[in-house]
Amino acid sequence: MYDKKSLKAEEFINHEEVLRTLNWAEENKNNLELINEILDKARPTRVGRDTFCKGLSHEEASLLLACEDKGILEKIYDLAEEIKESFYGKRIVIFAPLYLSNYCVNGCIYCPYHNQNKHIPRKELTQEEVKAEVIALQDMGHKRLAIEAGEDPVNNPIEYILECIDTIYSIKHKNGAIRRVNVNIAATTVENYRKLKEAGIGTYILFQETYHKESYEKLHPTGPKHNYAYHTEAMDRAMEGGIDDVGLGVLFGLERYKYEFAALLMHAEHLEAVHGVGPHTISVPRVKKADDIDPTTFDNGIDDETFAKIVALTRIAVPYTGIIISTRETQAVREKLLKLGVSQVSGASRTSVGGYTEEERPTETEQFDVSDQRTLDEVVRWLMERDHIPSFCTACYREGRTGERFMSLCKTGQIQNCCQPNALITLKEFLMDYASEETKKIGEKFLQEELKKIQGVNEAVYKALINNLKEIENGKRDFRF
Image (cartoon, rainbow, N blue to C red):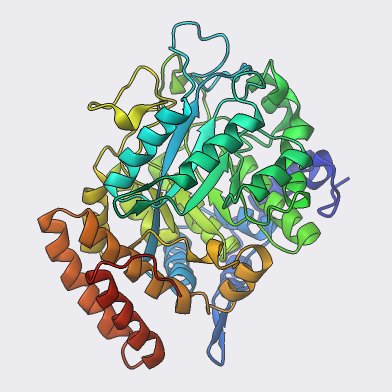
């Protein structure tokens, strides 16, 4: 039985409910009157100085995904761009993954770290190696990391993860500092989630890979990850452990995309119903080539146009949630998705253990192919040239604006009063400390144009921001609204 308030995986991600939803969407996909009503419902509305969005249910969003009308597709794209602008503005948060260990006891058939892969070199970073990786990332200009590790209770116990987090936060190199560590590790216990919370993590991220239980168990034939319920219920345990910012995601290409999309939104609805706050982020990776992995063996791959539609509808359905696109995708794909709802991107990523200290990008130990291989400086310049604000901001996390508090600000659009100036402050830091001459020249002009947009709209913020930017030029760092 479907029950979004249940704590049982097979009830809040109910197989029969997903199938019923997909059948209903297929039956009504040409009902343009109903579809237009749903689009109208999802449009932002202003009440005084606040902006609100109702979002969409998994049923409504699935109907829009099923609709093949080209005119409706254009409306979906336009609405996604309008919602993105209303709540996130033009800022794009930048982060990098940091792989700590590729030891893993699971047998996941889509991941090169599976324990049957005997020719991939296995490595676990020492604390000195963690320090070297972090310094390399700081020297690029990164402030926000997502740490990754395989599941191995012997080589990667929770104590190792906690020690790495402590090391990362402790490193201050020149003007560099990692101010937010997000964590993407295997499902664990409430007690361990409490330990991660106490360690000061930002978001706990866990990809479901697939919500289709039968497919899930086939794709995870061995290891603790085989347990579908334990994995799917992880976010509830994380929230019970005090982590109020969690990140969902599926690996598109493993199972039928319409099934995954409906179930992903059901998971978001479940978190909102039970905990009062939905996912802080949703990631949308696609299966990519890697050592010992051929993505063509999975017959559910999606083309770029379908992928763009999924991202746009995710933005419309869960308007307040951050959407993440990684360097799995090409520059061209990422550029299109920025307009349609993406609010976070990785930059200059290396998906191998110890990869950032290598002069050349190591390929034999990568978890997946990196399609966008530009430097961080190039990514920052590219964003500004396309009128996006590159942001290294971590202020909300460090000011306690997380979970329900963050969402309450986001749901009124008030978060932009903090996010836009914080983005400009961190951009100024990057330009002063790390940017090439070309990027710095473009960036200073870009900053002045963005300041003009704030002046006259919010004079108090403008004056404080001008003062902070001058202080940064004088050598001070880490201001935040």
